[in-house]
Image (tube, rainbow, N blue to C red; front, top):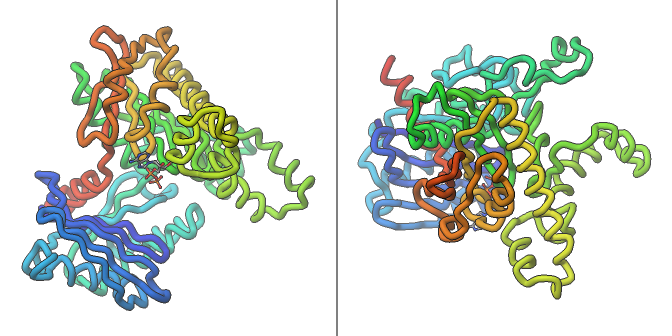
Length: 408
Ligand code: ADP
């Protein structure tokens, strides 16, 4: 089935047109600065290898969707002859709150429930609703399906998702661990399970989605038992600009010392911490790596190295904790921007892990940079397999959408 996968942000809309069976992506692109000055669409026809970038006014997400359809059906840069070839639309939705535990067909009721998710992820949810309404206006007869980043984590037991705060905060505000990047963890853990020669029910996998935002999950028998992100995507390991887990008492301490409001301290933890906070010069792992490669002669070396070593140490700790929580470990998977493209980080995480049964193949790791398919990074004799697996959230969204729509 041919599916249009949509990822709507507040002023942007990313899309991919994909065959849910073959997995072939025919086209992809992004509409930017929707509702603002100089809005533009960047469209790529992936089969012919064509790319166009056109400035075009888009007052809202409906205009953006009309422009996407125009490009998909364009005689030159398109890949279909008419809109009717778009059989369904699958939306990436960041937060399903306590309301959604699996992908679902969009209806008026579902949209009303999605409104309630604004409590958990206000900016994202508003953007998703605009994207869904934009699709409704541009393609009123095309079924839409919502696929939630939080859904795969819904299998966690209360002991993993509850915080030891007064219980009434859970009841009143729904404060609990939700986890994020679920679609990515689901894809790479399923791919990993296929590579392990045993029934899925018996597999124990730690998936490391390391990008600008990062999270680690423990997936036992195909189900998440724990994940590092929490009530919000701020929790867990160090990220590009986010601090990850810190002692919660630091928050009121800094607020008092620096005279910061809740919004300001939130900003510090979300936008001024992590790689950028520690290194003092960049949130991008490529910049840190090039300074580290230069060595101590570079004045930024020490703090760039510290930023990366903090991340390494934290990933190791999560792998250890999750191995204990699952009572075993079959495989570690690296994915996302850094996980797929940064051999140095993978090496420093996986060295000195013989105790866990990891025998790391440094040469295979060094060669696996930006791989297009799964690559094994552990030796044949290693008790625990280590892999890099490129994530494919769009394919999962397309497959879920096709499954729901074909059952209608
Ligand atoms: P997001 O969480 O925004 O989806 P990504 O998964 O794209 O982010 O990850 C962004 C991070 O991945 C950046 O730190 C960047 O340096 C790194 N990264 C992305 N592509 C490459 C690449 N080709 N080589 C090295 N690092 C990369």
